[in-house]
Image (cartoon, rainbow, N blue to C red; front, side, top):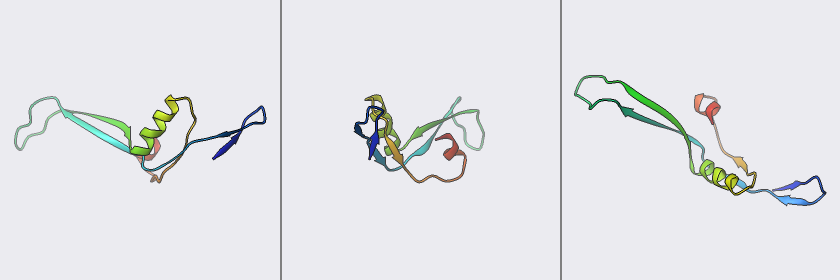
Amino acid sequence: MEKQRKDGEVEAVPVVIGGMVLDIQATSSIPPHLRTTSLNRVHYVQGGVARNIAERVTKLGAQPFRISALGFDMPCHFL
């Protein structure tokens, strides 16, 4: 993909195609016991191969264009 710069030059833009997902990491605050409940901590972390690659490309100074399929739910709004 190409992008027109202000000085008239054409600049190549990296395109990343693939999955973006929401990883759910849950940890228990106490050791588990059979047939009981325990307090937990739940963390949502952005993941997926395409999202991770796009993040690394951004850290190199580029502005990647991402293409991925998403639904209309909470993970979609978070990503």
